[in-house]
Image 1 (cartoon, rainbow, N blue to C red):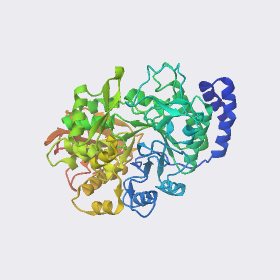
Image 2: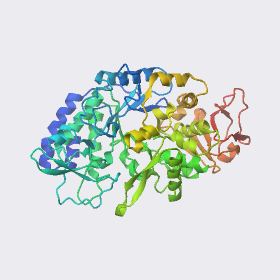
Image 3: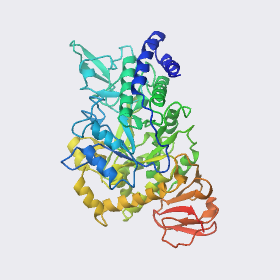
Image 4: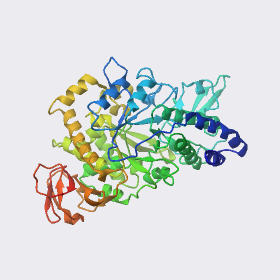
Length: 560
């Protein structure tokens, strides 16, 4: 029963009297928001765009209407879902300092436009659950939503994702100066989930998104949700309990809807948010993938990537990974801890700078500055790997890895649409992350897509061809079996699926022609390269397959 499950969650978070008072409030929310609906299970057709609501505009219509047109037009055969980054009124961090969680920024459209974007496709909505804008009414009025720790609160063990101060002074309405917890910036004030009013309010917000068509809720920065004195204030048991409570509410109010947790941390910490596979996140970001793929191409050696991918256990239950190479943020380095050497991290930092980008840092033990993320488009980082005219091949090869792996792939709009580093934007804002956040004009974009030989057209059509191969076979269902192949250091290989539908994808990270026998990879049978020319002779276990520099082979069992 729902009330029994909610009572269990609340009892793990609050004293008994507080839990009992809060329970009927959540039950009332559940009754008000319950909207059972049919939701298609995840399959190989799920490829999602990651984009800002105003990523593309035309200067005439609300940008959300332009996004709907793009998704229904040139992107219709490439993606079947979209992760809309925060589209609420905001004051900083390109949307992640939210003023009002229940409103749509008039500059991008209204709720009807959001509903239209979600109609007939997966819509992932950002729930910025950890913090709010310093300009929100809760901060201005200094309500119980603001996390303002007592002077005795021990912050000595707190894990920091940024170098900015942990506590920021504000003047409360009574004139007193109070200090608010600001994990990410002075303009992003943390919510106090120790106050059950906050839990009830944010639960209502999440269910409101589902009611307006969201089928996936992204829990932004959720690892930092709960704070306890003398602890690292990350991944606390109470944080997991809040996620379990939200999963319970979502499963009851809108069965088939999904939670995805955004936790940019080392892999073992990251996958803890699956819970037992039925009680926490449905999807977890695969943060380690991007730095490992980039490192493979930089050094022409895929061994670290292969070793890591081969070590992955299938997610529990019906959980799966959300794989991506780029997003609105930079390429995170924390998830690569223990997977690549410090020398490789230094090399990746140098690569980002050579690409025209930069590196962001966080505060480590004893105040030491540690690289946190690479601030560059993945396209420019791959371009900087070598000055050989092979940029498009490297971009396609890197995304072949993304699209072949077990899980749901996410395609950053900037990557899919061939957007390069926006160095002018960094100069305008003074923020390194702006390098990857350039907005586009629809007319210019369409002209670039239609211009044969343009960089934009080559990237888009190269990635679209790979997506078509993925979506045409059940071997690439997110839950389909995966076997990472042991091969030479220059090769990444994976077999997906079982029986006659199974596929093998081979990607070279080398800058010259390379040859391999399928039999040496433990692959039997006869295979046809779906990227090869029509009529190409199938490959058997003893045949030599030659991959050109940065080449890809997408192999299906030969039916003849």
